Length: 271
Image (cartoon, rainbow, N blue to C red):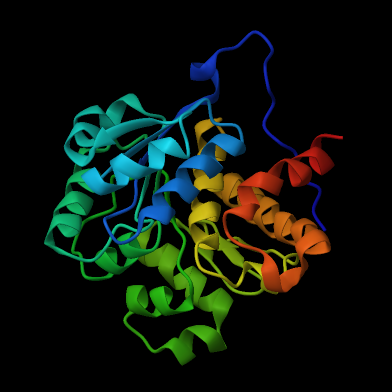
């Protein structure tokens, strides 16, 4: 298994040194996704993480995560280019407001700022005609069904050729693709493939994808490039699942357990 390294922590530093993540996540029916993505970006080392979401989300999540900062969606759009990385999609919901927000985020974000698109953001993207030629660092994190929508093909076509499907997405959207399966495949823009070989069934539970998206965002904020951040993020996420399972079993792990145990996977790398 590849030996990964964590981004270096300079001692003469402040929160700006380790980057700022802006999460356009959550909606009235998907409050947990907003929390999971935001806390995970902080737990992996980002200096600051902000959540731009709906009023209901903003009334609930701060009591669980006082370390983040909070904006309405409109305020987030105004401040979008003050951040190091943007994450959109976790629990976003599928409605006209979310579609409008998605279009504005992709249009307003400066070309040099990495964007991660996950979950409902991918479902909106599949119906979109936006041009990605100007985006330097785009990461898409689909599961196989979302991949089939992005490629306008059947789920069976994706499942029968995971690596080929990841390459097709990277070609189509000029992005790094994280195609989430039991052994997740990461495809770079140049179609280089990396397959993660750790993890277990503990991760086959709702909310774990939001945690992964947040972890990748936090690594990007610290200056790790898109392909390396995706590989390292997938590894940390999967290894954390293995570590938790030793205590809770693969049956009982919740997505909210992952950020609590993430430090154990990180310690393995830094020791």
